[in-house]
Image (tube, rainbow, N blue to C red; front, side, top):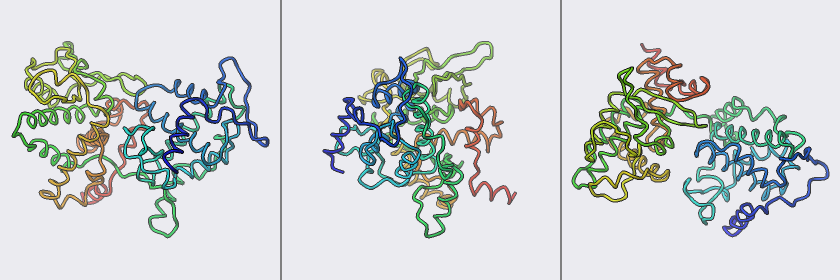
Length: 411
């Protein structure tokens, strides 16, 4: 599909002209009972749904991306409106997401503007995981349930989907396809994402040996040591770290300890005790920049961005952008992978995840798995530490790797 067509479609969506005037399919009119608060068009329905789902920035972005892709598919593949969508349409869309055509793939990153000629609905890797398709299905189901509840649709076409889209069935099919000639493009679920102890030690060694020949290099290393301590010892999501400042730190005189408060997904509040290693890192970072050693309700970002490399306090007032954070962690991981190959070559095949596949979220997984498997922390405590509403979410972090199973049977 040409860039001109993409941009034309995008502009029509943004200007409320996409699908709003399309007539329903005569064989399937799912128009609901119109109420005072019922949206009057497909675009308005999507926007009202996204407004309801507006929580954290990351959550809103994920819902917006999925609904936007669904609208593009409705316009370009089946040319239908929401009131004409059938269960078959939804199944076809999920199959489309499992194996999108090359012309729909190639988005270079999350920071690419939709008006850019490089923008595409799907990323460069057009082989999504089972978890990715399940997330897509969950959001689409939530969308249609909302449309039925507000009276825009009469029925919910997602309630009778084929069982082949269950996670277990999809994962089994994906796993079989790696050993047979049958083509099933959806990748099976990932192995545990956490770094091993050796990988984590190698990562820390990389940070400690970063070059310090110029003031800019020294400042970058100090920030790297500080930010990595924050990410690891709080298991914070990238967005949480980038949206909070050192005002999140508090001293609790009753318990004689420092705490840090996060407002995570859905604005859920969680208060965590501060690890002594994290407190040391915070004090070192503050002293380096000429502040008092302990947090004093300063608006210093937990994930600062150095715009001007000179030794003054003005460099600490802005937080790292999402794209900047991704570029930063990738550069650190590339250095660490090179060090791992040089000093720990025997560990390469034992790592459930390689640094080239790791992301900022891998640090959160690493902390959780170290607490569970290395420190022996009760899973209920880890659940509270991560801010999970359901323990089933935390159990996803307990999936053992093959090397952990080997160690267990060899003990």
